[in-house]
Image 1 (tube, rainbow, N blue to C red):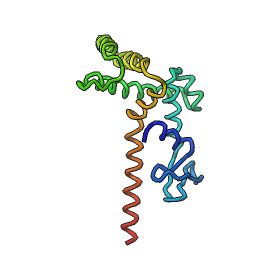
Image 2: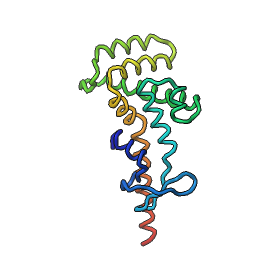
Image 3: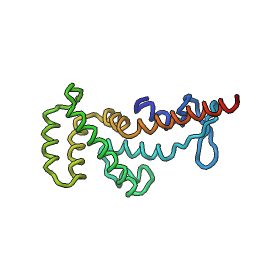
Length: 172
């Protein structure tokens, strides 16, 4: 699954297991008509909307208004994105295989400058701003998806598969 598939699943509220449309259930959940599994999309949808605004360079206040959430919640998500992306970009710069599609000299200079800054949050912000500035919005979203959302979605799917197998074994 990539960022466009993730976005499609959130927009159309598709089941993460079998890609079937879900129907409204109670307490804000959605239930797949095929596998009967219940999913909650509201938190993930809000986080994804904040990620889109982050990639566009919106302020946390503007992102909070668009996502219909509190400014502090948007700030926490922005901080989470910055930290995960900073770690990701540092790992990419250190890779010897040259898998980094951004000009490595430019990023290396930004890393050196960032390491001189004493405050951790400012360091992360500088590094992320430099690296994201070199990417298109689609590549920014893909990077955020891989660093922030991918593991969570895979865990959701894995837990649902395990629950399905457990139910089938109980029926035998």
